[in-house]
Structures are given as structure tokens and as C-alpha cells.
Amino acid sequence: MELILRRLYIIRPIMPNQEMLYHVAGRVATITLNRPDKLNAWTVVMEAEVRAAIEDAEKDENVRVIVLTGAGRGFCAGADMSLLSTVAEKGLDEARRAQAVQAISEGSESARADFRKKYSYFPAVAKPVIAGINGPVVGLGLVIALYCDLRFASDAARFGTAFAQRGLIAEYGMAWMLPRLVGHANSLDLLFTARMIDAAEALRMGLVNQIYPHEVFRESVQKYAMDLAANVSPRSLQVIKRQVYEAMFQTLAESFESSEREMLASLRSDDFKEGVAHFIEKRAPAFTGR
Image (cartoon, rainbow, N blue to C red; front, side, top):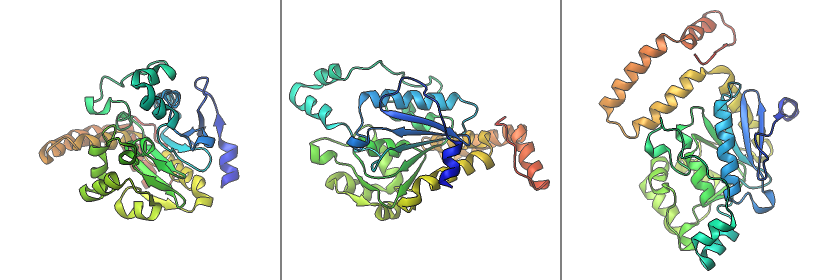
């Protein structure tokens, strides 16, 4: 499987990248945080590059699923400590000057304001975004993983909030997102103590969807993503994702009425016709996303 995936990979830079890698294979775009010597600690350079890569993948008609993962033995160790040190010593303005990069957009104007913030734009991306958590994920790294649609973990992964141990708070909307995944009590436990938990505990809490053995982790995540890209209607994926995130702000009646409108639209779509046809004809689907 690993050999097949390597042969399929197409590496194509979308900008002069410094801190991430971008691959497309089997209609899956893989974005890899690439500071392995620093456990992929987050910087403003990485932030801009990842945002640009996601926008590129969203626009690419050959991409149907996006995977975000880390190089080396970690997913993301949180904000780079050199930046935090500069903030502590010289203040936030000096830190921003020290790592200034070109500003990125706040996101599509068509997305609701909740999903147009610094990291909360992931739910507004029209395609599924999967976090492939290959190792430790801490602090800001965990925030980013929470905003992904699905989270798959290596059995070597470790998870921690870290904020309270740095004199910080639940950053970037984590106090809103984390309880929706693991519940009120588990969220306060993880945020209060900043303790590290293993992948098994993360799975029990509902923080991750699945655990894979570390030695086959990357292949397993790619297999899941490629299956999603090949066998499911991309139009359905886009609509369902929007429905689920919009429902967080809707009453049951509003969600029900929205689903009726979407059902009527789906019955007129090419993907619906193909979904019926490939089932009856007992063949692989050829969805177009229309």
C-alpha cells in the first residue's frame, strides 16, 4: 500500500513554501506541516502557507478530500516557543514585527461570521478536512485539529491543551469547540489540568474518530481519504458538511426545513442520478459533483 501511495503522489508547490509540503494523490490533497525538528511548532509563516494550501485544494476540481498532518514524529507542538518568549519579553507588537508575513484573508464572505476567523475557517471549506494526527498535538496544534472535520490518530499520538501551564486561556474558540466534541466535564478537565492524554483516552472521550497502529498510520489515513474521494458524491459531502455545521446554530425545526430544501435540490442533481445508476448497474461510481 505504501509503495502504491508513493507512486501516486504528485508533489506540486502552490507557493514558495518554507514550512509545509503539498501532495495530491487519488483526489486527496495532503498538507504536511514541515518543521519536524521543532515538532512542527506553529509559526505565522506556517499559518499563511497552510491557509493558502487549503484555499488551493478547495479550488482544485481534482481534489475532493483534504488531509492535514505533520512531518516526522509530531503533528504540531503548538505555537513556536520563540514567539511566545518574544511576546513575554517585548510584547505582542514586537513579536508580530519579528515574524511579519503577508496578511491572509478572513475567508469567504459567503460563510457565516463564526467560520471566518483566524482558525475557525476550516468548517467553511467546501471539502472534508481530515486531521491525520501522527504524534503529539498540543496547544494551538490541538485548536487546529479540533476545527478539522475528522480526526484520526496514531497510537503514538498524545494530546494536551497546555494553555493553563503557560498562564494562558482557552484560545481561538476552543472553549466553544472542545465541549461539542468531548463534553463539558472532559473539556474542563483537559483545560484546567493541561495534562497529556494518550490516543486511547482521546478515543474514549470522542476527541478522535479512530486510532491506527503507528507503523501503518499514514497509509490507513490515505486509504480512508481516497475511499471517500472515490466512492461518495462530492456534492453530497459539501452539502452534508454545511448542514452539520449550520445545525449548530439552528433549532430542530430550522434544520428540518433546511434538509427538505436540500433534498429537493439533490433529487435534481447529476450525482443523484449517478448514485442510483451505479447501484443498479453494480459498478464503481463516477460522480461529477454536480
